[in-house]
Length: 141
Image: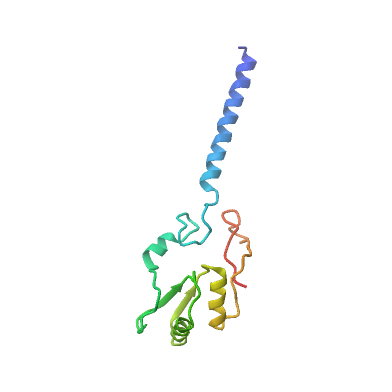
């Protein structure tokens, strides 16, 4: 093998290693397989850590909500009329209700029952500052 062939071989080896490194970086920084802002997403754009600390599944509200500062709700099923009324009374009396989009249909039904004229959509918005990191943000319109 001559000098020219050795240089050619070294170039291809370096190019291959650089390409492999680029692929590994893209895999590490690429989007996760779970949806962004999902309670089961363990990546940086999920809230599984927060969910494990502060979100406890409750299928009915206690009768006395005194001392409860916030309620997070992720509708996965239809929210019954009585539960909706409890939530509405809670908010009317100064409570903080955060509705996260679980099942889009049920989330929008809850917002409608609460008299909120916004709804969750499947639209994707781009943040002008962070669009390099993640282009998908939840959108309520």
